[in-house]
Each structure stands twice: as C-alpha cells, then as structure tokens.
Image (tube, rainbow, N blue to C red; front, side, top):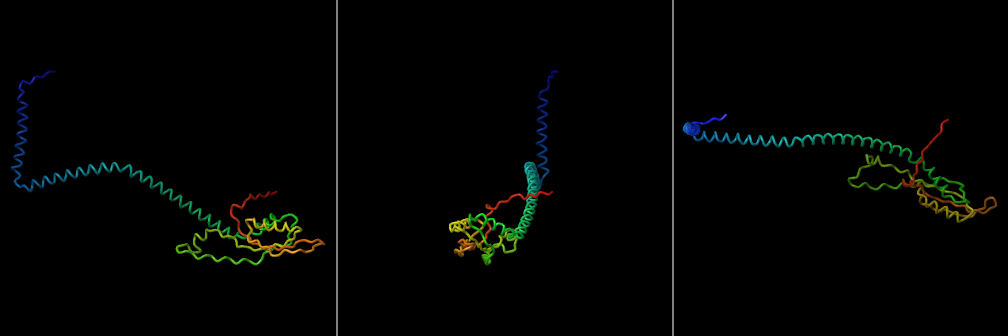
Length: 242
C-alpha cells in the first residue's frame, strides 16, 4: 500500500515544536533552580551514582572471572588435604615399624654372634688343620661415645631410638693344631679376609709332639665385628610338618 504525504511540513513543525519545548523546559528548570549549590549537589550525586555503577559492573565482571579460579583452588585444597592425611598415616605406620624393628634388633643383637663366628672360622680353616678349643677372651672395652654437637638430638630421643644398635664386640681365642706351617699362615690370611673378623693377632706358635708326631700348636686371638649388610644373606626357613 502506498501512502502519500500531502502535508510534508507537518512533521518538521512537530519536531521543531518538541525540540523547542525541551529547550523551554530546560530554561524553565534553570529558572526554577535559583540556588547554584543545590545544582552542584545534584550533579555530584549523579556523578557518584554513575561512578558506583561503573565500579559495580567492573567488580561483577572481575568476580565472574575469578570464580573458576576459586573452584580450582578449593579442589586443590581438598586434594592436598587428602594427600597430607595419607602421608601422616604412612609416617605413623613407618614409625611403628621402625620401633618394632629396633626392639627386635635390640633383643637379637648378640644372639647370632657365635653362629656367624663359627661359620667364618670353619670357612677359613685350611686342610690338615684342626681346632682344639675356641672360646671368648677378655672382653673389649666399649669405645666412649663422642660428645654430642650443639643442636644434635640428645640420647633417648626418637632419632636415637630408631637407630639400630650394633652388637657388642666379642674377642675370642682359637687354639689349634696343624701339620704344615704354611697352612697356619694361610689360616691367618683367610681370617683377616673375613668381613666378620678383625684384629687377628697370632699369640703363639710352637712345635709339640702329639701321638708320636710333631705338629704346630698355635693360639690366635681375634675380634668379631658386624659385617656390612652386603655380606649378609638371608634364606627362607622351611619346616615340614608331618
């Protein structure tokens, strides 16, 4: 449908009248407000409200941007709390096991000294050489402990309790016989090579007659020591029950 405006100046006149009315209203408002301080206060309040609006919008935008980071931080906090709780539980189990192992080592510290000692002496004994007697000698005086450094944990603390205690040193004497003096020197070398025996000292070696046969009677003094863990071998203990 086509419409034809037969009075084109009517819209222009209305627009001019509305614009003129607005100008008249502003002039009338200016004439009504006779106190300039009131106008300044109104403008100040308008500026403050505008600034508050801008700040509110910016804060809301920043809050919406930080919300995902907050959720991620909460999730990491929960994860680290669970990790720390599990770590404390594992440390409690570890401390309990260390205390039990320390107690067992304290009880069994010197139980297997003589089995190790007899095994090493038997392994080092050469051919045509035999032992007449083996026994403990004068006990070795314990070495005094060094003075604790400043700041080091005192004796009886957790660090001192957890440390394994080595068995006390045992000094022993070997009384034997041999028909070959070279076997005697070989026996000394093999005893010195043992990781369980130290301070091998030949006390005496003399020729005696036993059963109408000359032999070399010797006495050797040595000290038992705990070998390094690399020399300790464990084997499973099995027992058949019928």
